[in-house]
Amino acid sequence: MCSGFRDIAAEKEQKGKAMAQRDGLQVTAKELPEIPLPSIKVRDPLTLVIFGATGDLSLRKLIPALFVMFRQGLMPDKFAVIGMGRRGYDDESYRAWMADTIREFSRVEADSNTVTDFCSHLHYHDGDITTEQTSIALRDRLRDMTLFPSNHLFYLSIKPEYFECVTEHLSNAGLIKGPYGDEWSRVVIEKPFGRDLKSGTELNRHVLAHMHESQVYRIDHYLGKETVQNILSFRLANAIFEPVFNNKFVDHVQITAAETVGMESGRGAYYDATGALRDMVQNHLLQLLCLVAMEPPADLTAEAIHNEKVKVLHSVTPFTPESAGNATVRAQYVEGNVNGETVPGYRSEDRVNPDSQTESFVAARLSVENWRWAGVPFYLRTGKRMAKRVTEIAVQFKVPPLQLFNTVECVGDVCDLTRSKPNILAFRIQPEEAISLSFSAKRPGLQVQVENVDMDFSYAETWHKDLPEAYERLLLDVMRGDSTLFTRSDEVESAWRIVDSILNGWVESSPPVCEYSAGSWGPKEADSLFKDCDASAWRRPA
Ligand code: BG6
Image (tube, rainbow, N blue to C red; front, side, top):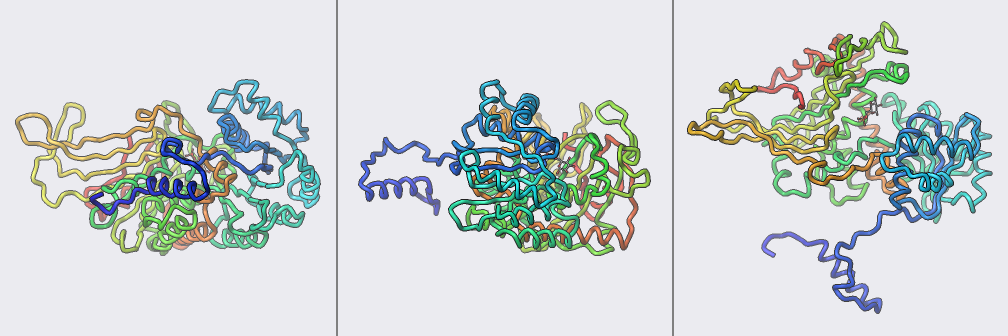
C-alpha cells in the first residue's frame, strides 16, 4: 500500500478471523460474509408510548414510519405501541383508524395482511396527559409485561407547554428507569425545544432533573433526511473536497430552505406566535450549518459529532443590535401567485393576527469565527410562500486569481461576455436529492471561450431507490439507542444563544418587517446582505 491509507474493513475481517480462531471456530475466508455489516433490525423488545397519538405528526409521519419499519423487518420481534389521547377510542377502534391512516399515508404498499398484523401491536390509552393520574394509570397498564415489553420509549408529540409536566409525571410514576440498568427508558421530544435561550435552558434543566442526557432524544427531523446525512459522508469519504473547505478557497456559503406552503391546516396560530427564525433557523438551518462547517470528528460516535457541532455553534459571532439591523432581514409575504394560484398575504391568513409583525421570511449573514472559517460569510434564508420548495446548501468557491479566458454566459441563445464564474458545490436536500458541482469548461468551437457547466449527481437516477423518510431513520435510531442524529442539550442552548441575539437585536434596533410577494424569492432587501461581497447574490435554484 503506497499511502498512509488503512483498510479498516480488511483489518476488521482479520480481527474477526483471529477472534473466531481463538474461540475455536473453524473459519475460512469463504464462510465470512462478503460485506460483514451488522443487521440494523431493532433487537430490544420495547413499548412505544406516543403522547399526542391523534395529532397530525403521529398520523402522517410516525405511524406510517413504524409501518414501513415493520414491513421491512426492522421492528423487534416483540413490540407494542400505545397511542395516548383524549378521543375516547379503544384498542379496536384505534386500530381500525390507524389501518386507514396507513393506507392513506404509507410510502410502501399497505396490503391488508401486513396492515392487520402491524395493527395488532397497537393499543389506545385514553386520558388527560396533563394529570398525574394518567401516568399512574399508564404505569399500571404497562405492568402487563406479556403485552408490553419493559423497555419504554415515550414519544412527546404534544404542545411544548406540556413537555415539563409530562416528563415529571412519568418520572413520579416511576416510569423513567435509571440509565444504566438492563431495561431502558428513553424520551423523544419534538421541537420547538423552548422559545429562547432562557426557556430552552430551563426545559433542559427540568428534563435532566428526571433523566440522564443519554435518555433524551431531541428531534430535528432535518437530521433524518438522507441528503443531510450525506453531507458529512461526502465531506469525509472523499479526499478531494475537504482540503478546500476553508477560508482559503471558499468565498461564502448559502443555506436556503424555501417553502411554497403558507398557513394551511390551521397552522397560523402556532406560526404567528413563532416566526421563521424560531421555527426553522434555530433548529434546521443551524444544524445544516454545523454539518457543513464542523471539523471532522475523531470517530462517528454521537459524542464526538455533538462535540464538533457545539464548537461550530460557539464560534458563530452573536449578533449585536447593530448587526441584527444590518446583517439580517425579516419579512412577510403579501398576496401573490404560487404555482399559478393567487394566494392571500400573510396577515390575511387563517388564525394570523391582521397586525402581525411575525416574520414569514428571514435571511441572515453569520460569521463563523474559527481558524477554518474566519472571514467566510454564511448566508441563511428561509421563508414560506416562496417561488419554489427547495432546500439546499451551496458552497461557493473563490474565483480564479486571474481571468485568463473569455467567460461567456448564455440565456437561451443570447450569450454575453462576463467575469469568471466561481465553482459552486451544491447539496440539494429536497425536493430532488442531488449534489452538483459547477465549473467552467471550454465551449466547443474555434474561439477560446469558457462557460459554466454542471456536473450532477442525482440520488434518483443513480440508485433508483425510494429514500427512507426522516422519521423512519430517527425512530430506528432511538430504538437502537443511537443519539447521533438528535440534538444534545448544549447544542440546543448554543443554537438559542445565536437566535436570541437576533431576537434581542430586533427588539432594540427595530428593523422593518419588509414585504415580498407570495411566489417570489423573498424581499429585495435581502440582497443587501451581499453588499460587501464581490459578484454574489442569492441563488435561485432551478
Ligand atoms: C417544521 C416547521 O419543523 O419543518 C414547518 O415547523 C416547516 O414550518 C417544516 O414547514 C419543513 O419541513 P420539510 O421536511 O417539509 O422541509
